[in-house]
Length: 170
Image (cartoon, rainbow, N blue to C red):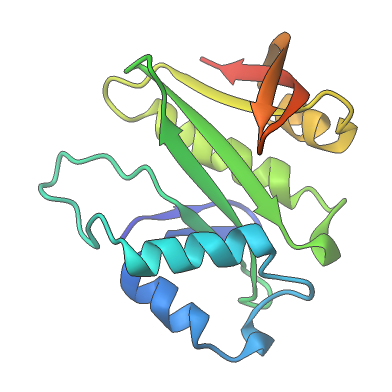
């Protein structure tokens, strides 16, 4: 299990065993308003369909997902996930933070730490992320984490067209 440190957070790989423990856990260990419906679904999927709880060998890259734990209180306050893209040298990341922790820089800190980790993985040269064009807070997170705007596209998301802003860091 990988731990990525940042000034106020510890980002810890989510394993199937950890997902099961969190699903059965006392809600007091979560930041207020967490887990979101999305995060709860990720926990269920990781618990039900574990890829592996340990890399197959020492060269296997840790591509998350990662739990975001506050250093000050140990609360689970978010998650960062990662997915391969059609381009083998690129990954796409997404983040989810407890609403009670919004506006404090946690998403930017987590995204920057994960992007730094991923760009150190052999063969990966680009970290991508996207957000709805009108979601200015999420776009600002990506920009403050060092990502650059690439383009806006209209894509199908959950069966409806959404205009997305695409960002990347190389």
